[in-house]
Amino acid sequence: MTIGGRWNLRSLSLIALLGGIMAAAAVAADVTRFSLPWPPNSDAAMRAENISRVSTWQDDLDRLPPLNSSSRRRLAACDYTAGRWVYDPRRRSYSSKCEWIRSAFNCQGNGRRDTAYTKYSWKPRACTIRRFDRAYFKATLRNKVVAFVGDSFSRNLQQAIACELGVDDRVEPWSGWLGGTLVSGLAVPRYNLRLVAVVAPYLVRYSNADWAFRQYGLKPGDGSRYVVWLDDMDAQWASVLQHVDLTVFMSGHWFLDKQGAEAVRSTVYVANNKVVRMSGMAAYRTAMRNVKRFVAVEQKYRGVPMWLTYSPSHYSRGNPPTCRRTSPISAKRVQAVAAHDIATAFRGLEVRELRKSPFRIIDITRISLFRPDAHVKLFYGSKTNSKTKWDCTHWCLPGLPDVWADVFQFVLKTQLRRHKK
Image (cartoon, rainbow, N blue to C red; front, side):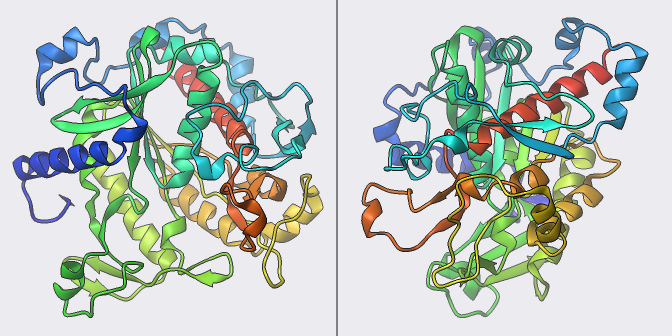
């Protein structure tokens, strides 16, 4: 397994450093409070900033009460994806004015007037998922680095958590060195908690540059096509992995040849430095296996790896395809949709591939299938009235990703308590 191709780790650190600097410069207008507190590979500086290497989590486990035997049995038997959505008028805790919401997902800021989609909570039949507990999250992850690695859906979760934490604490932009690589994200200074975002939609290395196509004797693309190296890890997350305490991975959508009703990309997959013909799902399976092997076997990752399952879309048949509903759909309808929905197939692949691995699954696929009402729809920009193309893939914030945060914390809390010594 390689990281980012043929380069050795020393070259990788330099490449990742330069990439990080360029990325930071590209968003400088939005991150005026970013700071670069230490040079690469400075353990002394890391100690001064109180950001340690990956811990064993024992200190965190010691703060949690042990589970009794009946609680352990209930958790083992709990399928939290089996349940229903319940309208909860007290659900909201932060507003659309939260500055960490990406503008394209700020539906209310972009003119959406209905708000019911923000006020549903998920109620499993066999157990209880409580609202996101800000105090618990900050106390448990004090002095920790949490990375959200993947596509826009992983950043949805990061932004939802940041907005929740910002209700009663200061959240600010942050950038710094982790293992010689410059990364950026958000921080809660009072708890020395970092929420790092790493853009890696395939999780493995990819490029749409002309040289990537010419390398394999192919005609260069138009910028929308990609070469994807299935056995090369994305350089940025791979180089910082051992300096992150908890990593949430998320992928899948970019492996589709179609999103919604339009073909958006034609991908060239490479394995063992040869172009291979395979479906998007087969390519995703290959990438997942390589990521799993890299994290668990090659790197022997000492932190907590988690995987957010596939996020469903809800395009109706029609011209144009839409998602006009303003409330969740019924369980009967979900059952009918799930039988042939691509999201169910991708989620099944993820569960099979991650079984008997260190990865903890944050299963949000089925609960999200109920929620066509929570998509961005036409509210993904300021000129909403001129839009005719519906977005039934991405989600509004505030909205459904806030419930993902509830599930994320439930899985994290369960994982830590199960392993309390």
